[in-house]
Amino acid sequence: MSLLDVRNLRVTYGSGARAVPAVRGVDLSVAAGQKLGIAGESGCGKSTLALALLRLLPASASLSGEILLDGEDVMTMKWGRLRAVRWAGASIVFQGAMHSLNAVYRIGEQIAEPVLLHHRSTPAAAKKRVAGLLQQVGLPAARADAYPHELSGGQRQRVMIAMALACDPRLIVADEPTTALDVMIQAQILRLIEQLVAEQDISLLMISHDLAVLADTCDRLAVMYAGRIVEEGPAQSVYAAAEHPYGRALSAAFPRVGDAASRRAPRGLPGDPPDPAALPGGCTFHPRCPVVLDACAAEDPPLSVAADGHRAACVHVGAVRSEKSL
Image (cartoon, rainbow, N blue to C red):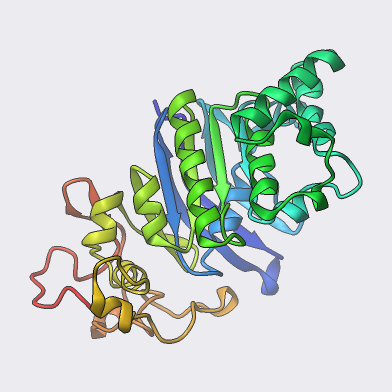
């Protein structure tokens, strides 16, 4: 059994005529110790999916489907049980550390809070745990006395990772954990996450717009567009040989090391993802698709087997294509 199983998850903001579908029938699973990446442009539903996993969405959101964490449905948990599962069962690393940390509390106090709450530790034991966590993420224990504004962006992100690890969760959800960091610090944080996940046998669900980062960090990769998963499979397979035109566009949007042509002229995709309140009929990607067919405006294809362990939701899957690039 998977550690995390998401079945037909749907998230809608608002109600009635103003209902906006943000996540549309997502199915995914994460095995114990596995690293799954979720890729897609802004507005594709990635962060809504992440927040839904622990029911952190605002009251305006309506959820349906199943979110099974270790076989227990998060959707039906009572408040007390849900509170116990957060941090201890699964935790989240948000993309904006400065927005997630309390500016008027020292970071040691903030890391200690879930330890005191969930492990019922004494203040002395919690302080020792905080020192160990800071050292684990590459920060001196003395930084526990610092306020968030006294740390660099990379240090604050390390603090967020320490907080996520505080109660020994089995699953960490990392929502764009390196977006605001420069390239060198981004690489350090990614290596740190990889190392900690491997050492502690933690499952990881990482969200990013950067397919290359996810392919380098994760075992499997899922691509989201307009609130649904349109492709999923082994990370390197999806990155190097995407079967869905959108997956290929994401992969081509970033220059590749050693590839002079891609560095001089990185390719992208014109336009933006559709407004969730006004989704086009048929395949939601068809207005931007470079290989669109007449059938695409009428048919919204399900995920179909494209290769061993690789699935894509496209009418071209299984057909012989002479052109694999955009």
